[in-house]
Image (cartoon, rainbow, N blue to C red; front, top):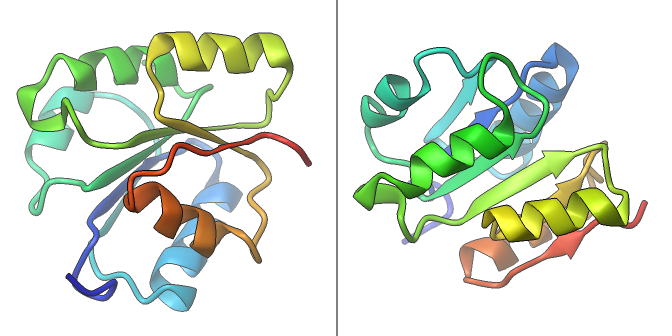
Amino acid sequence: MTMTDRPAILYVEDDAHSRRLMSMLLHGRMHLNHVTLLEDSADFVARVEALAPAPDLILLDIHVKPLSGFEMLALLRQMPAFARTPIVALTASVMSEEVQKLRAAGFDSCLAKPIDLETFPELLRRILAGETIWSILQ
């Protein structure tokens, strides 16, 4: 598996600037072909089930509407196809209380926003390799 044809990544983010930044990183810098960016979580399950290829990694903004990142995570974990898919929270809320909630909810990793352009590609590679990363320090 090369980074070019895989992995397939899904990112749900309501902030247009954050979506542009992620697109630049994943398409431009990392040269990934299978990237889906959703601007909201409406009809979330149907939209995820329609993705081909299915995501190998899912990045969820926590504060999205109508479903929050926590609600999307719960739905994904109920779907057999995504039981083992790494699901990463992206949030600007990096207080220890919030991080504890993310861990307890079942997120595999958490990355603080704004995303660090220099370290993000390596963090993504490590998460895809199975590592759990809680990169919450600014």
